[in-house]
Length: 403
Image 1 (spheres, one colour):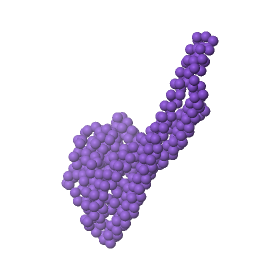
Image 2 (image 1 turned 90 degrees about the vertical axis):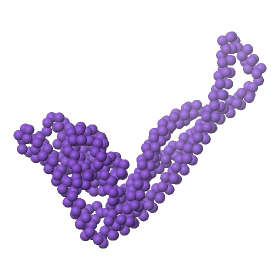
Image 3 (image 1 turned 180 degrees about the horizontal axis):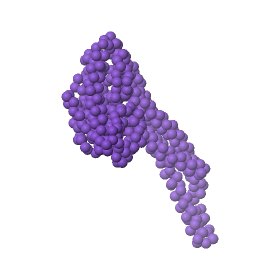
Image 4 (image 1 turned 30 degrees about the vertical axis):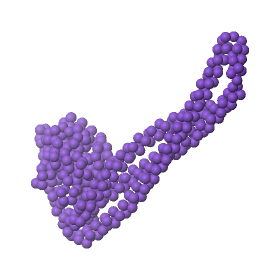
C-alpha cells in the first residue's frame, strides 16, 4: 500500500512540471494571438475607411488578403491553444483520479490507525506496557514508539487535509480550462464566419476589376515603369561599386574580387541562406519575386526584382545581416532607399522615411534602419525589399527564414 502511495506522489510531482511547461507555451500563444487580433482590428479600420474609395480597389483587395492571412494565422494559434488545453484537461483529470486514489489510501490507513488507537485507548494499558519493560532502554523505545505512532497519525491527517485542498484547486482549474476552451471554440467559429464574409467582399471587388481591366492595367504599367527606373538606378550603383573595387587591382570583371575580410562576410551571409531574419517583425507578402501575373489583376503581367511586404504603420525596417551602409537614395517623392553591402551581397530596403543610419555606418543584424512610409491615400505601409549577389537579383524568399 505504501509503495502504491509513493508511486502516486511521484506521478503528481512529474506531471506538475509538464503542466508548467504547457502553461508557458499557452502564454506565448495567447500573447501572439492578442497581437494578431489587434493587427486584424487595425487592418479592418483601414478597409472600413477606404472601402468607399473606388480608385483604391486593388489596395482594398490587398488589405483583405492581409486580413484573411492574419485571421487564418489566428485560427492556427487558437487550434494550438485548444490542443494544449485539451492535453492539460486530460492530464488534470488523470491527476484528479490519482489524487482521489491517494485520498482513499490515506483515509483507509488513517481509519485503521484510529481503530487501533481506539482498541488500545486505555492510558493504564499504555503505562503497564511501558513499565513492564525488561530494562530502561526498552522502556525508552516503547515511549518513542507511542510518540512516533501519534506523530504519524497527525502527519496522515495533514496529508488528507492537503489532498483535499489540492482536489478543490484542481477541480476549479478544470472548470476554468473548460470555460477557456469553450471561449476559444466560439472565437474560432466567429473567425471562420468572418472569413467567409471577407471572401464574398473580395470576390465583389475582383468583379469590379474584371469589368474595367484596361484602367487597372494602365495603372499597373505606370507603377511598373517607376519601379523599373529605381531598379536600374540600384543596378548602376552596384555595377559602379564592383568597378571601383576591381579597379584597385586592375581587374575587369562584373563580379567583386573580394578582400579577405569581405570574403569572410560574404561566406557568412551565404551560410545563412534560408535562415536570415525578415526585414520587418511581421507582415504579409503582397508581391513575390520574378515575372508573374499581378496578384490582383490576373490579366496583367509584372516583373518584380524583390518582394513587397505589407505591415502595420508602427513597424520599423531592420537589416537582415551584418554589413555596411553603401548608399542612401532619395526619390522625388521623398521616399528613401537604403543599400547595405555584405561582401558581394547587397540588400535593398525601399519606401523609407526617418532614416536612422548614414552612408559608411557598420550595421548589425536586426538593427533598425528607419521607418516605412504609410501611403496617405490608401493607408498602406509597404516595404519593398530586394537582394543582389554581385549585380544579379536573387529571390529573397529563398534567403529569409520561415515566418
